[in-house]
Length: 343
Image 1 (cartoon, rainbow, N blue to C red):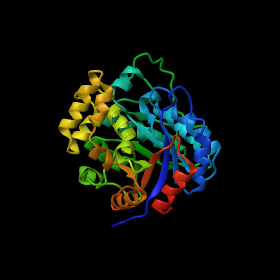
Image 2 (cartoon, rainbow, N blue to C red; image 1 turned 180 degrees about the vertical axis):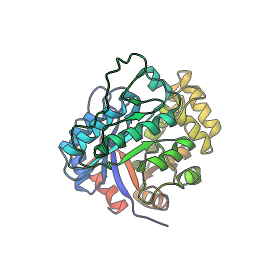
Image 3 (cartoon, one colour; image 1 turned 90 degrees about the vertical axis):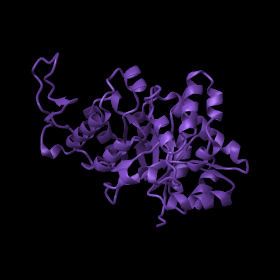
Image 4 (tube, one colour; image 1 turned 120 degrees about the vertical axis):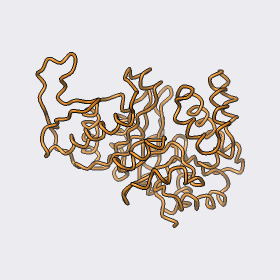
């Protein structure tokens, strides 16, 4: 059944510095009725500071992290930051979390990456307990996290504590970025929303079984590249650049969630070829090896009539919010997209 869609905008990782147009674009998006604006982090700028900055310059739009790297902070540090921004934004914050892959978790954050499912479950449970401070001090004995800590190096003086501030919302929404079938199933069980990196409304069966346990209020905020153009191939090139980087370089051979997802979506040979080219240092060839058909499925690219037509597949999917990339978006582009979606 066709459903109404919401719109969100995401500002990705910085290169040398921040996008000088972020605030202007965020304010235009808010004025047009966008539902949410998101910030990202990997191993450069951090998402919380970025989110707080945008929150300070907006009034109504929801502010989310898409995503906060779980390995970068303990669960309680993440809960503190989330509760702080939620207060400062007047209850507009969405905590988006992600576990990332071994290259980032172990290579940059210096943390173990084994058992991501179990770690995520404990991480989310601790955050929820911290925010429910009325339940009492935090006392948690998990496999990966212990409060108070009593393992190697402990001096034995820790005691259960509770958050000093009173959270504005004890049920602050938590979204999780997940791709593997087990990860998505768990996300539908323990989170308020899901952040897929790339989702095809033409292949809903890929995730249908994993989403069965989601609540009726569960949100799916899916990235969709948007470009109004008569040159569809040129409009898809930024999507191919993104896919080439994630599928080819964000992980090791045999341990790349993005590569495995593309394989499950019916592009097995192409996914492996992209990864092979990327590891050989042939990045431009890896990008060009991304099939236009695959990039097109997760995008809204083309003349206005084509975009309107392709929006129907998204409306008939379980996706609740279309997330478009910020950057050099003109107010006219954003208004046209808002008109297409009908917000």
